[in-house]
Length: 90
Image (cartoon, rainbow, N blue to C red; front, side, top):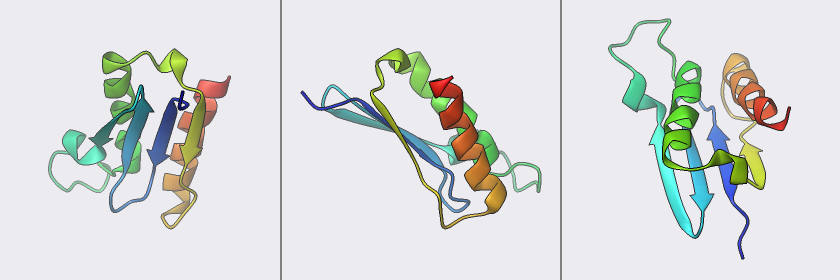
């Protein structure tokens, strides 16, 4: 059986969280949570909302591995993605 995977992409241009579980893939994009183009409304900052939405649909305790993009992107965006992933491991 294939492992259950969580992917966190904190790239500024197309941030999203994706879950591969039981042979199905579900993607939640940060754009779904952004209103307007305010400077403080950056896509990586909305990644937690993406992961939360996935948690409403799936049992994230069953995730076997987490992958996080480490570039290209802003330094802060990459730190946000890594911090979310680290929160799962703790």
